[in-house]
Image (tube, rainbow, N blue to C red; front, side, top):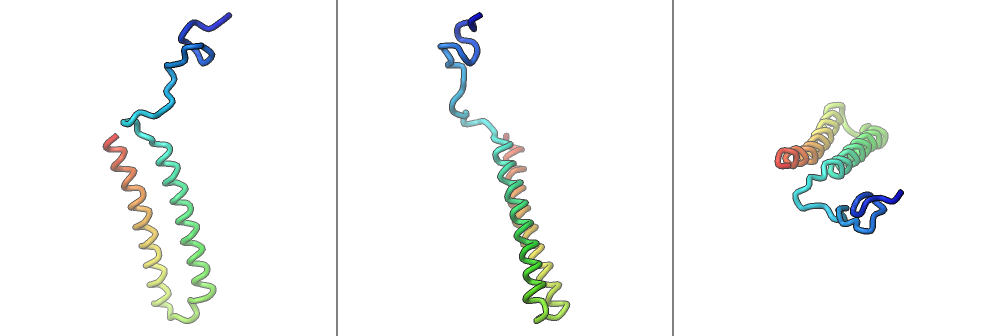
Length: 95
């Protein structure tokens, strides 16, 4: 049995398949995937920085100075992730 003309992926007239995205399409999963990867990478980088700091540089500083370095690095991570995810939120509201 052959597919009807203009229907199905094996038809000769397969013009109903879109090859390019429309300009107003919202790419939720592509942007979401990049943000998830960025979140994981930033978190791994922060944990790596914290471990390296504790291993090599922390003995030179007092407890308060070490806490300040930890809090500032955590705030930098939070700000970066906030900026990354808030842009997704605005895109979702517009979409």
